[in-house]
Image (tube, rainbow, N blue to C red; front, top):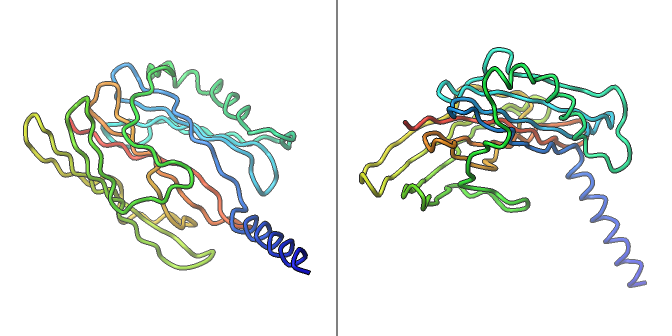
Length: 232
């Protein structure tokens, strides 16, 4: 009798876990910076939960303007369902081929990926305040994500901005920045997390990789966006 209860409890946990995490989780890919560190190319790919078909997106960002360049957004949705064990990366490869003209125009180098200053590991709970020191530059960072949620269920929307304080040991100065659009509500997005913070190859700008939790029919989907901060 006890064994049956344990098996039943295990089955409930498995089913509950499946319900909570239903949806699809995109994978973020750093596709490199331009030679002058003014442009950043990134992508995401995965298998759509609703139809089991691979998808991919590629974006090129103007870092000083913190905005996409003209013709710098490309999407791909496969017409074929994914094979068992497929991650969907083939969709990204197809899309990269279509973005060769833009890549060459902005002189993107796939090997020029900058340096990671912060990384939120899978399963790690985000902190209200991120604090770390870059030992190469001698700068200390204090970062807060300020987000607001509106509505519920299918009508949910949310906004955010990133509060940044940078202290330099060399100059003994403190700089304060606010990154993002605090009044821009993204429909269907429940919450945000800072997944990575990358410093550009010229050490003058920061790239915040932001994870978005989007409401889906059977749970939620994970997608990515970036915010760029030029500190020069």
